[in-house]
Length: 302
Ligand SMILES: [Mn+2]
Picture 1 (spheres, rainbow, N blue to C red):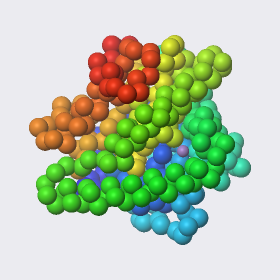
Picture 2: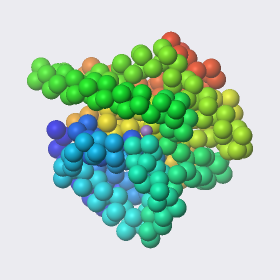
Picture 3: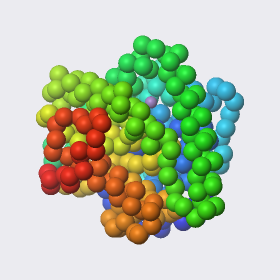
C-alpha cells in the first residue's frame, strides 16, 4: 500500500479540467487510495466523472465499502465546495443513477452526456461509452458474464502482485495485459473507437472523451480526437486539460510517485510505465492498429 500524503492546499496544481472514469467504488479492485492522492494534487475548474464511478452491479451482491471509498466521495464533495464544477456522467455500472439524470445539486450535475468546450475552442463530447459497446447494449447477460470473468482475472492479478511485491518486483497488471492482447485481437477496442468517432462526426463535434473499455488513450481517428480516461482499477489514469486547452494523459506511477513529468526510473516497472506512456501519447496514424504496437512514435505537438 502506498503511504497516503494529502497534498497541501497551497501546492495544488491549477488545471482547467480533469476527467476520470471507471473508478468502480464498491469493488475490491478499486484503487481508491491512489485516486484520492491524485485528486489532492490538483485545483480543477471542472471535473467530469465519466461513468462507472460507483459500481451498482457489484453492490447488488453485498456491500463492500471501506473507508477509502468514502474518502474519495468526500474529496469530490470538498472539491465542489472549493468551487470545482462537478459533472457526473453516468455509466452502465452506475445506470441506477440514470433515472435521476439532469439532477442539479449546487455545482454538481448528474447527466448522461455532456459537451465540453476546451480553452482553445474545441467541442468535445463527454460520454461513458457503453452506448457504443454492442456487448453491453444488446447482450446484457454476456456483459454480466464477462464482468465475472473480469473479476476473476482481477483477483488473480491481486495475488500475482502480492507475490511480485514479496519478491521485489513492481506492479504489473495481468488483466490489462490480457485485455490488450485479447480484446485487440477480436478488434473490440477498434470497433468501439470507430463507432464513437462516427457519432462525433455526425454531431459535428471535434472529439470525444469517454471511458468504459478501461484503456486510456489519446489518438486521432480521422478528424476526430479520441480521448479515453482509462480507469482506477488497473491502470490509474486520468485526462487533464491545462489552461491553454492542451490535454494530457496522466498515469499514476505505483507506490505514491505519481509525477507524470518525471522521467522513468531504472526499475523494470518504471520502464513498463514509460512504454505505455509513449504508446498512449501517440499518434499520427489514423488506422487502428489491432495486432501491432505501431503507435510507438511520439505524438507531434498539437
Ligand atoms: Mn462501463
